[in-house]
Length: 223
Image 1 (cartoon, one colour):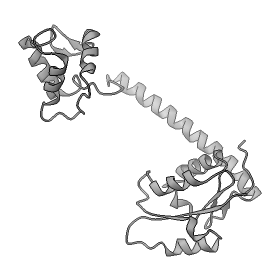
Image 2 (image 1 turned 135 degrees about the vertical axis):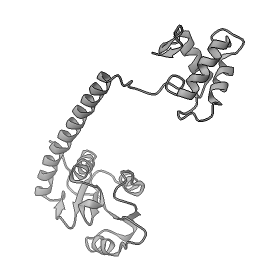
Image 3 (image 1 turned 45 degrees about the vertical axis):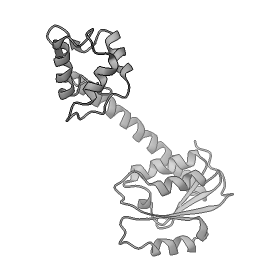
């Protein structure tokens, strides 16, 4: 069970609207009426569809144990209930209290502290279910022959791989006149490559040192 401290710090407010056209006044008035000082009210104009909220992240960084975050409504901090639950659970782990004015959800009260314990259980259940779904999806993908992990900068880029095979057949590689640095420069220059370029020639040198796994030197194909 999470240990939620009594409110002993400062009140912080967070208000958000989705577009530049929407007005923050309703939320700001509610936060001021709840006792949040003007200098500790943070505002953001950002779509609710995005998961990145820079201003909300900044509020969390300045808050300390015993402080409380106040919002006008729960949907200001999450797109759905699970997202809200996980957010409040994370605050509780940092011993930061939370209060939503519209839903009268208040961790500064005994009932609110009881509710966050239930919410923490729901949040952990969602994390566990997400992990199970992820593992099942990865297992299914492997069974279909999908290669997991980061993309190989040469093997998984058809245009770059075609140039690699061309250089191999010409005798320039693996032990021709081209150095690892020359090869990487040549392959990175291939137009239309969708994968990011190789940052260092050592990536090629290491691959060569392992015997070019993933490349059949007889058939000149990706394996």
